[in-house]
Image (tube, rainbow over all chains, first blue to last red; front, side):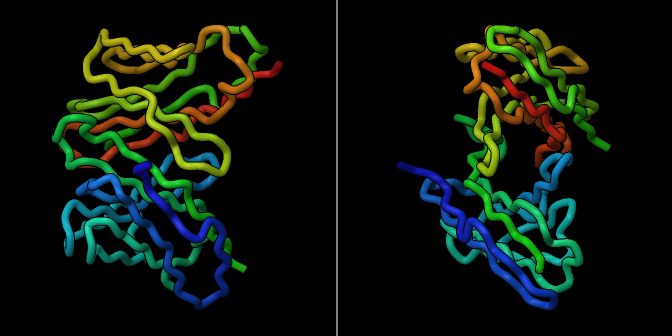
Length: 117
Length: 110
């Protein structure tokens, strides 16, 4: 079955460490996204990519970095510059905006929960 | 600035007790209003997309409607398995990305 795989499901980070969250999709989607979810808040966009080797900052990109070397993969690195990284991180993919069918409909992974020790 | 506000934050219903969730939006040139369901510890799952005022879509016990200022998710005779957080999101004509509300946590008691 096609879908999005995120790993690890749970991750713990010590102060000053960088950690990388994996996101792989086999849906043949061009666009991929990273969102952060905190209790009581809506999903906030960190980064997105519509094509290999290109990505754009979302609303809360500071302290995060991404790469898109393959269409299927969009890893997120949470750097030590992110001062409050404890959150639930969601990766998603979609067809390109405006492309039917299912334009702009996001398919999400199961999420990765990051906790700072 | 695009905004999406959901109410109530939490809703507890008895099994079979119908109700509605509200999603108010101020999104310039709305291109689509999306509803997702999210179970605890999991990623959201797509439910509906609404594109224009007056549009309605149904799926089992759920019906989504759209006006020029808000969307409603009506739940008819809910069952405990409908318990989840329901998220709505708006896509503006200018922005390339969705603006999400904070969700309504629905609990259906047997």
